[in-house]
Amino acid sequence: MPYELGNRLVVGIASSALFDLAESDKVFRDQGEEAYRDYQEQHLDETLAPGVAFPFIKRLLSLNDLGAADDPLVEVIVLSRNDPDTGLRVMRSVQAHGLPITRAIFQQGRAPYRYMPVLNMSLFLSANERDVREAVAAGLPAGRVLGPAPQPDEHDNDLRIAFDFDGVLATDASERVYQTGGIEEFRNHELALAGIPHDAGPLKEFLAGVNRIQRREEQQRRTDPGYRLRVHVSIVTARNSPAHERAVRSLKQWGVRVNDAFFLGGIDKGKIMEVLKPHIFFDDQQIHLDSTARTTPSVHIPIGQINDQPDARSEPQP
Image (cartoon, rainbow, N blue to C red):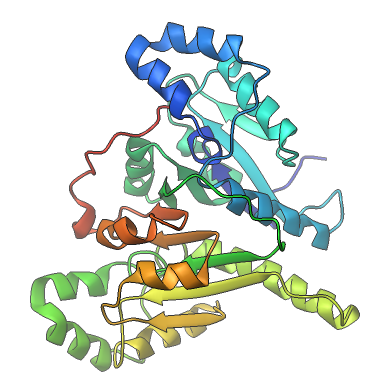
């Protein structure tokens, strides 16, 4: 029987998001592909250190204990620009860290995001800005990871996920109103359309997949009253009253939900993240991420007019 992905939450992860490839990337940039290949061969048995998205992926995969061993709720697949030879170090590092990731696509120098639809992926994370922008331009749910090297965090097994709303869970249609007409036109627009749901944005299906796991947790708690819910989802948005209502109504009409909502009206999101401490935060605006990424694993979703100009900062190749 073929292994079906249709009922699972499937996430694609580039090696550049899962592991710290700064040293390997420097070899590639300074000395070229052949030197990079030699370097990876020479360091094949040296385990790569965790990267920005590592804690998120580790905790997401840990939720498979809610299902049968042969029927996991979550599937994570490595999508890499490495060729199979240089990808060996990536997969050995996956094994060394005890991550239950067994599937991978390695395409030498090419972006494998094209396989996302056939793999039922609702999210692809990479540190490669070009790959992410090309995936988003193709209508695929992709984001570029930003943030500090992860710190040891083993005091619990919770998974905290935070989303911006516009340009992430919803399209950026209302953001375009703000950009052209200012704050008052934006508020009037949202108040007038409060009962009409937004069109769903790139990560709505990912949230729906997370909600399925949350429902499984609730089932577990009904049979085991001592079970403590692990997954916690928040929206953290620059919206405030009265524009908050349309966001809340949209979530409900899409059939998804969040545990918390922060309607900040311009308050620095980075300060909220220092207290909330999500394992990952998704936003479409670099100005917010410049603040959050100082302390929090963050993901840039580059959609819409505000992201027309690529970020000039460099990114890892693999």
